[in-house]
Image 1 (cartoon, one colour):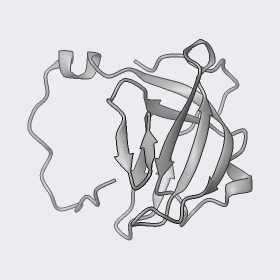
Image 2 (spheres, one colour):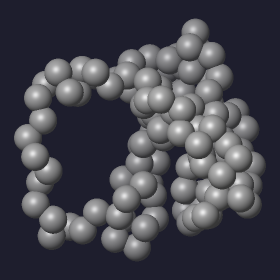
Image 3 (cartoon, one colour):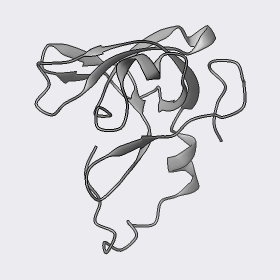
Amino acid sequence: MNKINKKEIIKDEAKFNDFLSLDIRIGTIIEAEDFPKAKKPAYKLKIDFGELGVKISSAQITKLYKKEDLIGKRIAAIVNFPKKQIANFFSECLVLGAVKDNGEVILLTANEKCENGLPIG
């Protein structure tokens, strides 16, 4: 994720259809492992999106989260981006989080129990 300067003005206005083109879903992290080949510290995640299946992602969330604490966490992710190669790994979804000035990423999570694959809108 890119670091965003708080002093940066709001990005260009987006059209509502831009938002509608994103498929953002709730998924549960079922596996997390180190990703030593990534340029920046990251984990490889397996995320269960219910009927959409299990998708894998690389996430730069190592500053605030331990692998074992991620298991069972319900997160938000964009599931309709094309695969992105990161080192020898192909990320299938983009895990969403808020990026602090120091680069720490706070995962966007669902506090209430809900089924995997629910869309966010």
